[in-house]
Image (cartoon, rainbow, N blue to C red; front, side):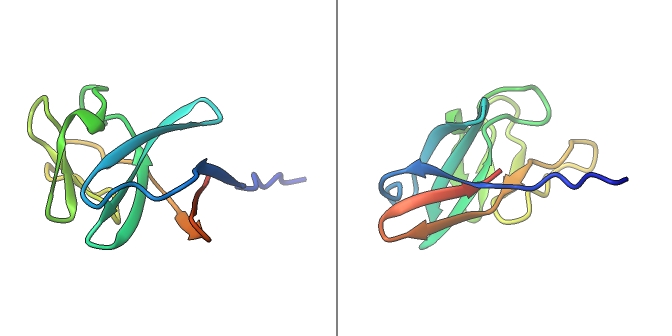
Length: 105
């Protein structure tokens, strides 16, 4: 018998973050961040896959989040790393209903 792990939507914020900012949230013990960038919501793990530093300490550049430690960047939509030898960032589905922000984990 095969078990399928079902993802659930969790309320993360009571309102969207301000444009161009990253807000850390914790869902089921996981530290994530939500950002509103160019009118689009994104959610990802708040941890650089390279050195475990919080990505919210970095900055947004275009459609990427840049780590403050070594300057590696990750695509907000796909999680793709700027470096071939650095793992991709884990992203999560995010949606807005009324004014509230929900993340699928």
